[in-house]
Amino acid sequence: MSKSLGNFFTIRDLLNDWPGEVLRLNMLKTHYRSPIDWTVKGLEEAQVRLSNWAEFAAERVGDTLNKKLFDTAVKHLMDDLNVQPVLHTLDETVKKPKPSDRDRYTVFRILKLLGFSGGKNHVSQLASHLNGALAQLAFISPNEWRNLAVEILRQPDLKNGRARPAARVIAALLALQERTPELVRLIEPAKPSPRVFELFELAMNRSEVEEDELTIAAKKLVALRSEARANRDFAESDRLRDELAAMGISIKDGKDAEGKPITTWEIAR
Image (cartoon, rainbow, N blue to C red; front, top):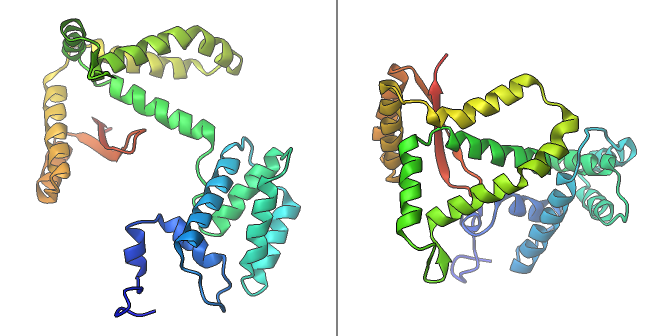
């Protein structure tokens, strides 16, 4: 392997095409005293294994260990970092015809032990997606809802065989409305505290409240800052953050359900 032959790559080069966790697994699956197999096939196999383990662990509900399984993994790692039997154990556990919730949680813990994220469980993912959606609904003004309605009435639902954005929004809201009775029936036994419903009502009704000057100014500055971040004008982004902070506005950057950058804000307490 050499630069002159064109087959020399740094980790930074590989990160342009592969997730960091895939590279980590590709290194871990070979004992540190042996040469590492850096091939596309090896990386693809590592990616599949990681996906299988994460999907298996995501089905967990509780947080109780299969102590025997976990202790065996730790014992192998204490034996000169003998990772290969641990990875084999993960593969065999995932293949169980009737795995227990302890198995799923233990796979998650072993993945964390090896330095992998392990992934959120499905309930956490769903909660995150719903929270993100509700947070956005809270900042939609009555005027924006009216503009959406006008767009639907004025334009056809489809363009070039694809649904227009406004039509997709209405379709999603109607689907949620149709599923609401079923969802209420399913979650009723959980009996959330009254405070949960108060927060939900606040989020849904906030868009109907007349916006004050602070809200209007904050939304404008947040939008300008998002534009600056998209243009990689970080100096302007920092300046707008400071201006919002001076107004008593706290902002938080993150990503929506599709992985796109998003900024939420609130009045600092």
